Image (tube, rainbow, N blue to C red; front, side, top):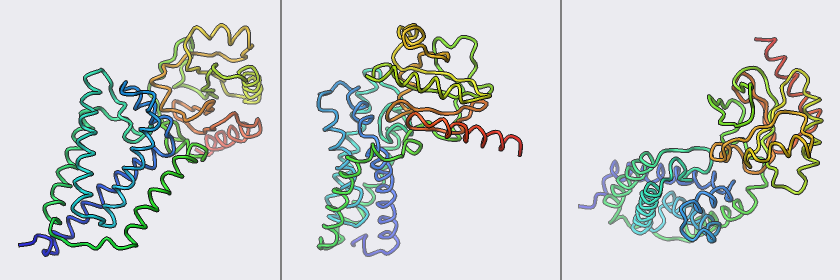
Length: 311
């Protein structure tokens, strides 16, 4: 008896395929919008680190091809098995990462979502079980590999490749990082900000690096922004280490206190630097993916004050 002839089983199998594919597509979009970060996460495993960017691109495109093939039911015998093989590969890599001390940094969903390796393995095992059910039910189901299916799969791969190439230039930082309006952080692992409690009051925060050619002009612009932010406490966070704090204060004359934030904490907060944001009582209210204009900061402060007055 062909299980696919049972409409209920066939329908359930197709729904399961689409759900698994949707998970893959979500991961693909988040990683394609920030491929550099994904490549950095791959490099942490120490396996051919010089090829990490190529590996990132390859995995992004392969995942997208498998996902769309599952959705359109292209090669129904082969694609679910290939997807299972890829998930087994991910489990193996995750176990290897655990063995070398990597924690919540699998890169499955870019920098937006960080999960522990145990949770990643459980999720992958569940998807493998779901796809095994799909294989059993649809094994004898005949599906024509018509031109429309082939064109859809190839077109999706090309679209994802284009998104990976141009995604980093799209204004999507609030979508693919953990720093976005409404985000709350209970702890800021910052060294050097003595007496500053970032979870109390309102702060204009500069997240930046000193490892840039125009650091001097950037600090000058930050100084101007700090002066324009009346009623806010301006604070800087660098990702480079505490040894640079004295240089910032004396050589570049930073007019605001600066601390060094732990890199593992900082990396999920940005695609590129500098990033600027407003913190109100520990909650992010406004973000900018570059140094904003003074007028934009003033408008944000006024909006925040109006919201406070209204509440």
